[in-house]
Length: 257
Image 1 (tube, rainbow, N blue to C red):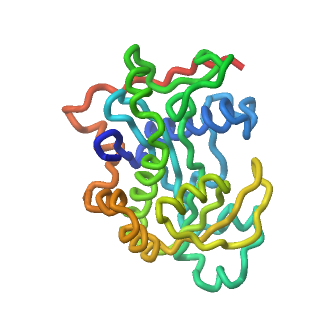
Image 2 (cartoon, rainbow, N blue to C red):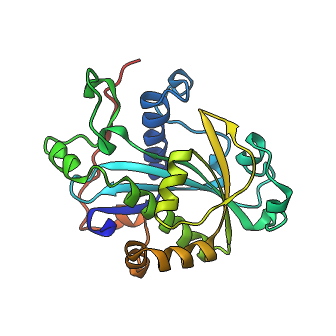
């Protein structure tokens, strides 16, 4: 189902990374207000961890809109991982891993205008918009409520990347709601420590990729079907070099602070 509607793209070029940062700006600065938009004059939300990360995007196949993003902060950087700066991680958990083998899932976000209807009294003109098209609304209405599939698609892409680069574990700091969603989808996560306050209450988890993939495959026909698909992601540079790809629409920022 995911591969019918969406594709995950690894942002391996500067243009691809800018799209990733712009999605984050829309979600974290404009829609949620978690970050101060005045700190990002270029409309791109980024921080010190991005130089240590790989960046993923999700695009709707129907509307060609860029609708979601996630990064994987890689192991081996001297700054460690954000989760250790925000939470007290149990020693029993850190004993299972080594710093050189553990990555961290971070900045997982889906733009609000795609994910659900706008609340009463809120205007589309008060948001940044990605790849606006006259017919995008029709596809958005058909594709909304696929948030679990989008999350699974991003996790599958990051899992493939991790397997290719010898990364067996992830840390993931998330909300209770998203943790429950993943649990319903049979994605096994080990509680890694006490909750912390970071843009609301967040909970740290450790994911053993091999175990999580096997348990999810057994427990969900949808995930088993997704894992049979060989192409978990394509590279942004491949899209740019593909003669069959139409020119990518530019990012249009319609929000004025």
